[in-house]
Image 1 (tube, rainbow, N blue to C red):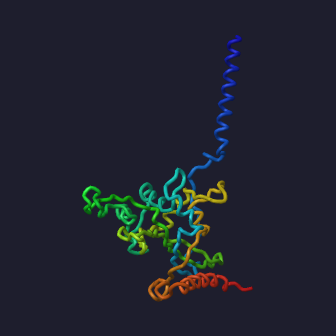
Image 2: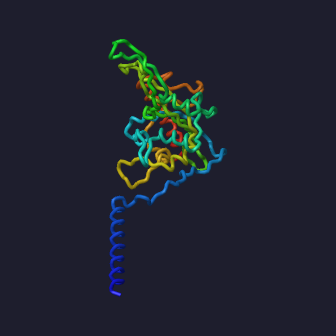
Image 3: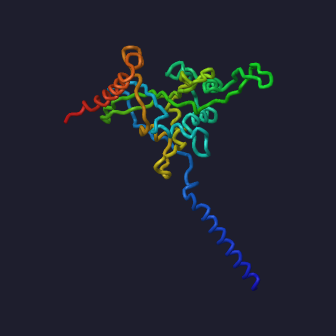
Length: 283
């Protein structure tokens, strides 16, 4: 009887030690495992075509080198729970049947392929001349390059601003995104001419479920679970306008204004949109 009591006491102590140890292990990250990536995008307000009394399409540029846009660019290498926006789009294309469109236009008419996307991101083979250390002669060597999503440092954004008379307010819908790769050619050793190329267009409403289930880094609060969809829905990014619909066949601002004049023209377009809503009210 005494042996059985000792065994029971030993088992109780063993269970207590296991429970205490497990609590200590979870104490380092109390929120780990409490969240699952099964979220839905923030729904848009219902909009009838008859309620849109004014609308205008504009095109913006998001420069990821600006500090406010860093959450869209970093990390440059995938981590366990975080990806850059470009890496996330490639992941959606490869794993979740996301459709990407060729950059021939911004109307999402021609789907593209992974081979074309990889080539535009720098993947492929190239031939370089290199000196043979033994003979001193110049020989050709073939280099296999991998794609470089970290070269994407800008995005084109197509969006529609409209006035909803049912809610009596100005609103916006993002239509599409186009990554821009910034790079130097191999022969440009001194890096004098920066090259820019479009990679693809993606229809923004189709990627919102993907964006809503992937978090970005929040520099001020680790407990706030901010997603890519939150950044775009809440307009938590920096950008400038470079094109608007107009009678001149959608010409770019830099076709008729340069330097400071182009910046002022961009601000003027933004200010005109703001004034439209403001002037509809009476005080």
